[in-house]
Amino acid sequence: MLQVTDLHASVLDTDNEILKGLSLSIGAGEVHAIMGPNGSGKSTFANVLLGRPDYVVNSGTVRFDDEDILGLFPDQRALRGLFLAFQYPAEIPGVRPWQFLKAALDAKRAYAGEKPLSVRDFSKLFDEKVEAVGIDPDLVKRSLNEGFSGGEKKRNEMLQLEMLEPRLAILDETDSGLDVDALKIVAEGVNNLRSPDRSFLIVTHYQRLLNYIKPDVVHVLVDGRIVETGGPDLAMSVENHGYEQYIKAAAAD
Image 1 (cartoon, rainbow, N blue to C red):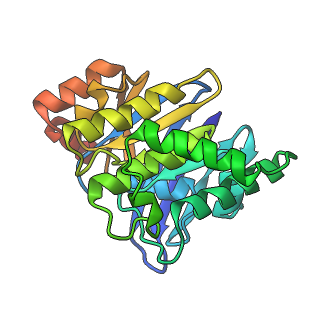
Image 2: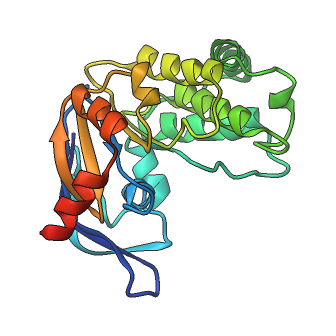
């Protein structure tokens, strides 16, 4: 599904290279987790995958379903089935979640050659998903993320995930700022959507989200490169022993 090879990327208009030869492969139906210390490039990698214009890819390849996507705009990548749950979701004044998701789902269906859902059918689906992710119905009457707490913003990201059903969902530190109950709702949303055709890339600093979402593969990212790959036990090892051994190994290379 996703093949990243020797990816190098920098912040726009700087010489600050953050990704320094990152490679990984995610198969259909797999759940991968990327862990790493602050500043290792985790969020940069997530944003580069979705084409955020603040970053420049210097070299390397990113292929999704065997298509080179580095030349595609973010909306084109989204239409192909990529989704990014942001670490810090933005507020969009004047646009309610219902409007935002109706437009997004209509665009997705049009790309697939399908007719848009009627307002009635969409509203029914929207209400079902709002209840499923535990959002206060009064919140979705506000502008998107406006006045939402950190946890409420993350729940709203899960609402988007449930509605759009992407083929590859990237969760960028979605667990930050969540209490245990909200964390379980995020995990339930991911686990409910796991399927042989849908994959997840979970970007996190801590192991706690992985108590509820069992990954197939765990990667440790240090200084822009993956320095260790393993199974779920690797996440527990990081939780117990920290990143120091990986930081030292990366510095020695």
